Length: 333
Image (cartoon, rainbow, N blue to C red; front, side, top):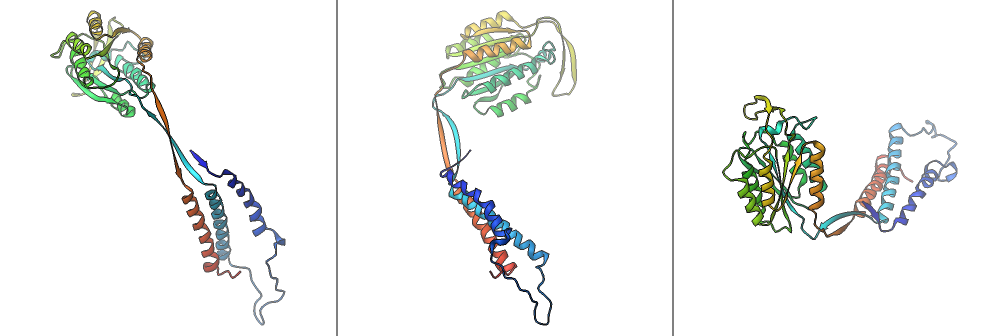
């Protein structure tokens, strides 16, 4: 944003149009000599060439542009930037997302479970302020994709790049939760939260979900578990990222609700069931409402004077007019 120290100086700009008219277009302005005769024994005086006329006109334009910029410089232009600086720390959140093949089930029309989860996660991330958010993916294995960060655009970019089955064809719920809890264990945030999203049963990994949840709970990390899927038989279509082969089939079983409730209870959190797009969005809205801390911030205002730029441009334009008139056009008066 731009502000001026002396905005009243800008009123001088309104004097430029009449000054231009008086200087260049008013016939009664004076300053002209009329010769009713021609050179002795030679040709009469002829009007200046087109090139000279163009140069003089260009010089006049440069002069008045220079005057305009100089007036703006007198007004004291400043560029003002405002930055909100938080003086309290937000909540550290890690989202653990299931990337197993069953997440390709098409019961979240018009898309599948995985795409629906990514869309809702994106909306959740955008709605937060000053809360470091990270991302864990799990399939046969688990991997930290993004540590808790305030760089939300980077987080969303990584989320958008995640693919089903890129971590294998299993569902290591315990490993996903353990990786998330491990990376929150050293956090000094006032609250630490894991949001785990899955549609299956724990069938891979070396750590039991109950064990990981108990470890998270003992460290004061709250665990929310979201079980997604309709529970009814549903078609599945997924492309293996390694081979490029498209796999089709039917998912008969849903998630292990008893296990997920146990995990949520051990992590001092809550279990949610989301069978539709709307339900999944409502779950994240509920978590978003509950997981809030009081945030205190300051508004930092920085003012950067910019009159030097306008003054420099103005002087350059006036000097250009001088060069054109005195040197190129060889004007005497």
